[in-house]
Every structure is written in C-alpha cells, then in structure tokens.
Image (cartoon, rainbow, N blue to C red; front, side, top):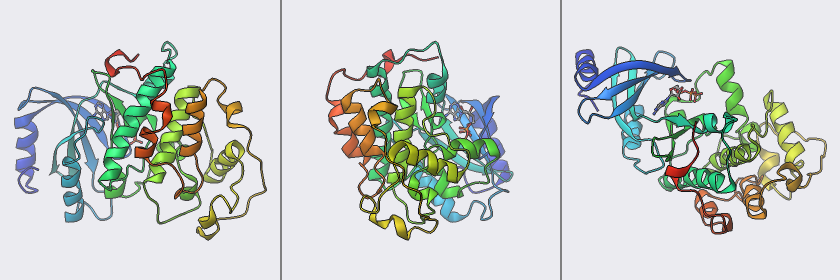
Length: 313
Ligand code: ATP
C-alpha cells in the first residue's frame, strides 16, 4: 500500500512505478488502464475505482479488506499487486491478462472440446475453492470476470470487491449480465448467503461453455426465477425447506423439471451429474467447490487440456 492517502505520494507512485498506457475498458467500478510496472518490467492492469459513488468511501475497513485481498495468492486468482488512493480514486493494480472466458465462448472460430471445457471449469473451481477456504466470496461470477493469461491459465478477477464496495449502482448493461448468474436464494431476497451463490454462478458458466450462449437469460428478477424454474422445475419445500422463509418468497405455479439431458444433449453423464449438483436449489445441499473438484467428472476421460494448449481468440 502506498504511504498514507497523500495525493503527491499517489502521483509519484503512478509516475514512478507505473507507466500509464491505453485504457482497456470501463466496468462497474471505474476505468481500467494498461500500465507497465517499472519495478518488475511486467505489464499490469490498473483499476481506478471512483470512490465518490460509494457512500462510505474507502474507510479503514475497506482498506483492511483490500490488504487481505493482497494476501489471496493462488494460480487461479488474479493477483492484486498494489493498492493506493489518489485524487478520490482508489487504484488497484492487477496482473495483466490477455483475454477472458466471455471472449472464448463468443468466438465462433473457436471449437471447444470436452477436454477444453473441463480444463476451464477445473481452473475456475480451483480458484473458487481457494477463496472459499479463506472465507472470501466472489459474489459477481460471470464469464468476463474469468480472465485468461498468455499462458492459458484462467484466473478469477474482482474477488471480494462486491463485498468491500457493496453492490454498486450498476448501469443497465452490467445489471442485466449479472442477473443471469444469480442464485435462486438471492432472487428470493436472502440476506444470509454464502459461498453457494458462487457455485450457482459457476454452474451457469459451466452450462454456458457447453451451450456457447448464456444459459438462463432472464429479463427481470422475476423472469430470471421463471427461467430457472423452467429449467429445473419449481422447487418443492421438501427439496429446499428454508425457501418459504426467504423475504421475497412467493408461491409459484408448479412447473415440472424437464430431463437435464434435454437441455444439454452433448454433455457427458458425468458433466450432467456435476451440473445438477451445482444447480441444487437448497444452498445448504449445493455442492462446494472442493467437492466439485473431487467429482468423477474430473477423474474420467478425457483428461482436462493443459492450459497452454487451450484454444484462445
Ligand atoms: P463488470 O464491472 O460488470 O464486471 P467489466 O468486467 O467489463 O464489467 P472491469 O472488470 O472493470 O469491468 O474491466 C473493464 C475492462 O478492463 C474490461 O475490458 C476487462 O477485460 C479489462 N480488464 C480488467 N482487468 C484486467 C486485467 N487484469 N488485465 C487485462 N484487462 C483487464
């Protein structure tokens, strides 16, 4: 962390250590630009987070949490290299990544074999398992938050930011995409959610890799629940006993579940079994990231493709 919140220290820090390059894009939290870290010679991505939008600003709790994120080091998590405030913006410095899973899924020139899909899912679950073990949730899992490095490694980006900065006022585009990955307990307004929300989202990403399009594309929160029920059947209270106590729970007309096989005709039996466990309604019964990594899907043939051999845009 740069010394204090001193503006000059921030400027010096950017000027001294990081040489600013082009803007990479803008996300929910602010602008991201490319830079070179002169200390290491590595290319980095600097996320400038506008603090004005957040009621609490960067208080000490947030800074302490960010310090914890800097210690989350794993091959499948984007490394937070540095963090410092400057001119009302918090600068978060991350390792630079070439592309993301959304670009892979959307690229029609890319053929994804079952072994390639397995490799991406395994890397995603490894990153999740590591963070969940440390009690950190992601809360905003979606394909464009799964970044891919030059070596083919998939890494989870934006870990913990949703918790530190709260759910930001997303503009329409961001909100819509985030909804498709939202777990049913969140759609029913639960206040006490856990790592199972990341597993539901990971299941949606798994499904999206198989289908090559987003799986459950709801146009509103109610419609999102409708899409979920159409895919998996309306949950029965025997399946999810706590459901009826959730703040926004309302009874839905019963819809039976179609066979999962009919939704994913090309998937292996093992892939379908793992998917069904990631899409378990009751968050308490939903598979954990660690259990998912031990599922027979990862032990059966084909073996996951080596990251360096994965097809990329
Ligand atoms: P959202 O905020 O809703 O997740 P987003 O993923 O587009 O949307 P950001 O994560 O802020 O928002 O990213 C903005 C842009 O910067 C995107 O184009 C993203 O690919 C790019 N980007 C973010 N982090 C990195 C990184 N570590 N390396 C390279 N590019 C990055």
